[in-house]
Length: 383
Image 1: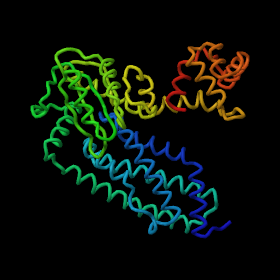
Image 2: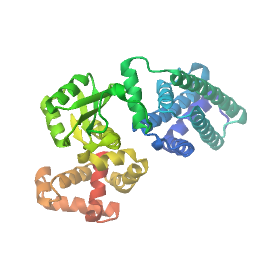
Image 3: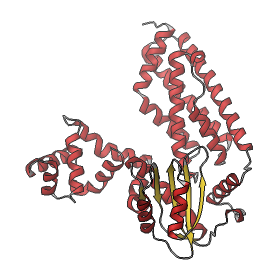
Image 4: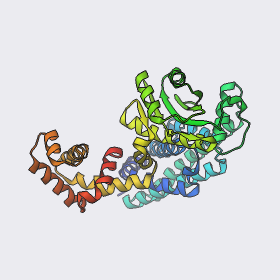
């Protein structure tokens, strides 16, 4: 069957969208192999890169559907990631190699589907030429944005403090006198996200009689903060005071107490890792120690995907897509694995709960008592 150019565009875009998870995974795997983004100390870096990869794939699909001339401007997520690359000192060479890899993989997938659908070679060449043009456009825009950001030098006091904090977190030895904060003291790291969290952080430091160091991330309503002093401040105490302040529209996460420069970094990383969990839960304040496993799972793609495939996807084979099974498991774990309490919470009898558990075990292929911990994490973090 022969296809017009417009028909080929529509058909191939539809086929690639059907393979979107496979396409995204292939590109992510290749990009990570060039330079593992998890080696960048900024925990937000991986999230930003993954968002940029998804935006780049969607942009290429749009070009495929409507043509290069009618496509929108370069997605803002790609430009934001280029700036983040520059600020986190990811070399432009690495950034461009990632784009070249993504371009090549997308072209491979496109050619594969074109061959499968019998698209004429002349039409495929036209489509690949459009993809090459948009690839050049992306490379030019990203290179220019990276170069501009790399040339930016902190000018105001807030910018200099932010740059100093970033370099200290990256393990560099820099003059930190301008911070007016004792890095040899006892620290408690915090993260705050929302509208206007700085007054909340100042009041928190005042009530706890602590020195406050707080800096705002570029382009984000997110603050990294530390409470410092000569004695250890327990995370539980900070959580209690934050809750008492009843912050509106602000999420706060709290690391664990630690000492010295290494502890200053470590407590910050804990608070930052907990932020993703707090936002998923939609809660005001979260302590890292309460969500450590969940935070680690969210940052580990292999673990998250494995938990989904092992424990959640099998439940989708049930008639209701696994809704009753998931509800039963959540109630079961909330009731500390007590069948009677689970039945009462669900408004069913104990036999129903046992039957559902038995069905879950059959689908997953393992006894619940052996997988309960992993399954509970999967339900909390992934589902």
